[in-house]
Length: 363
Ligand SMILES: O=c1ccn([C@H]2C[C@H](O)[C@@H](COP(=O)(O)OP(=O)(O)OP(=O)(O)O)O2)c(=O)[nH]1
Image 1 (cartoon, protein in one colour):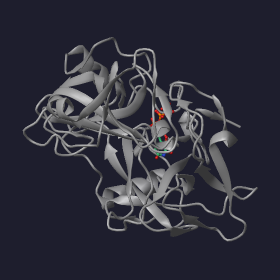
Image 2 (cartoon, helix red, strand yellow):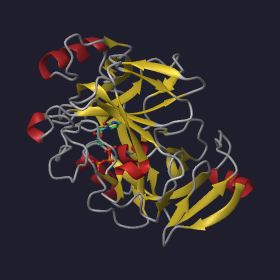
Image 3 (cartoon, helix red, strand yellow):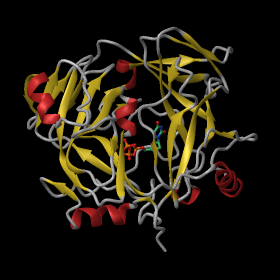
């Protein structure tokens, strides 16, 4: 039985398309609907703008583009987006949401792992990545590659959207109960606080002491639509613990690290990673925060899946230590169980992962 409130599952997302609540200039791709989200596709133009902006309560995004656009890039045959530049791309999908349905967007995990900063913008937006209940209008994606230049084209999928009716976040007592029956985070002493369950960083490393990777600068371009395309070592420097189990984050660098704990999202729930404490501004651990129903779920082949963390230090160098809490997972009810779970026949790339770079790289 479907709940009244909760995150829409795959079946309900395809119904949105059939009933004209989700509109697209072309048919959805076969694998575009995920267990609890929809991948958003780039349209055929990118506007290179001088700087990021927020439309605010009285402006359409297109008004701002008229003023701020420096150059228009055709994406039909693919184009390079350079690091350090800001682009706005109209998305193929637009919305006509019912009054009781809102949505939120996040970069896909593959996008976060490439250090591509993306945010969805709506007309009249006062917040990024948030789509208010009842929103009717176009969607735009702000894109700013930070470490590697990228190739994108019409139809590339960098961001994803979750739809929700009402609020259905689990409170701490409910979260603790679910953890007792389902082991959400494999920790002897689970830390449930701030509305979520804590994740800590692994800096002890694997049997070779590998703890993570640091992105190289001045690399070749990464085509976001191609898997197993590049040699890891052309883009990443491996990092080893060398017995100290700590890592000094340099503010100008981008790191891929991994959680100490295995993570589990049972099929009736969706999770999202949030910063450990928004007041501790020294570092941020992720761009991509959505964790799918079925991630880390043993019957979906996910036993032992860890969370891959995209880490950046802000103003000053910062020492991360093994076991330090770096984020929290908050859990929300699904409206109903998805027809397909993460990892089961969806071509999922990160089920049962340990320390794993994005799908674009090969050893
Ligand atoms: O910071 C994050 C965010 C997500 N994940 C995991 C959980 C999530 O369920 C999985 C896949 O995420 P997403 O669907 O965003 O990735 P994708 O790039 O679309 O990959 P796939 O093709 O496997 O769906 O990666 C992480 O390890 N770290």
